[in-house]
Image (tube, rainbow, N blue to C red):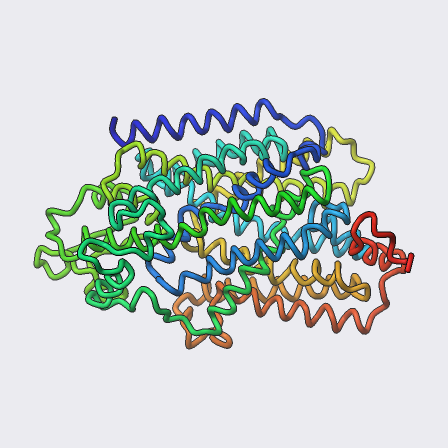
Length: 561
């Protein structure tokens, strides 16, 4: 069978599973819609968390960034992995014990203020819409190549699928759909990685193949360094970014992870605090499988791509180039009319442009793997994008229905709240689709902006809300607003108003828009501290709650000693 047939078969089969699960697990109450009824097993929740966490940025775009940036791309590996550890150990158990399953709900109760809650809702919406834009873009890219439609049509198809199971099933449907999506995405990521590792290094373990030797006995990374420097590239294994920016991006991704509302809510779908810790451990193992493989996929992909295209006759390029040219995600232009492809990125003489987001998706075709592997990767890319999109849409609907409408109308019936949640999710799907059609950057870049916004707005107020009894509502409101406005303004200025100034010479302290969330976080912490010091302390009741959530169950209260 050809690639298109395999793609329809595998993507269609996976979609049928997702929709079947959504129908079977349809939410019938707000508890099921928001937290899946709180009865999910730690193992299932670990898989669902991993799928929620590993978005289109992880599956589609991260290896692409590493492929084209080499060492500099490692910030995404370090930041996202380290951030999950930070979230699992430092925040999740305390938030679970506090009992509020949305960040705005936590902020509203901890800071005894509806104003603080509304500011948190605004922050959650900014973060979630920015993040989901990257997912919808990923959906469009997958569909555009494998179903042979344009990216905009692909985004609309993805919107329809997400609308169905996110709006219908809520968290209950999403959780069990994400278990299936994790199985699909991890299988789809590992199978081609193992195939290509065997081809290049004769080692079936990609992580070991990355450090192995290719034909001729030369180490793969040494050979890759040589190929790239011959073409005028920087060495693959050394970096170009300034240390300050690497630190800032890594930190922003780490602390942004700990403030992401769609991941935090997953710890409320299990019955006990102990189960929240256990599911976090499972999730880390499941995440590590993909994250330790991504550098190998990146190196294999860029090596094969350059080997099959650079310096080749324009009229004899491999079939995979023609396939991706139809999507406009690869362009070839023989500028000097010598009949050969000159690959000199970032220079006027460059005749080949490869979109960063296609490296993982194109890898099986570049390596001439069987057609069923190509179709499998398409299904995996869809699973990664849709799983995270669904989680984010639930956060948006919850923020509107529970954290906004319920605040102003506390006597609202459960049936009405569920209806509002579904309407909010449906509206969010349409808005997300618009940003998928008109994205502010490539997938991982857009997601990095979302993490920066989360770092600058939520992380300080959550940390200080748990570990400081002196932190009050005035400090929280001022800190969130200052952090969000500063970070958002910086990103908008350099990405939309003056993109021509988006260079190292013009960045503040050498920090790029992807890393500016670190400075936003520092501003938030400083404002929180200063304002809370010159305003009244929180009520004693709130201080007692903060003391108690840090004491493990069964160890007595904070006042027993």
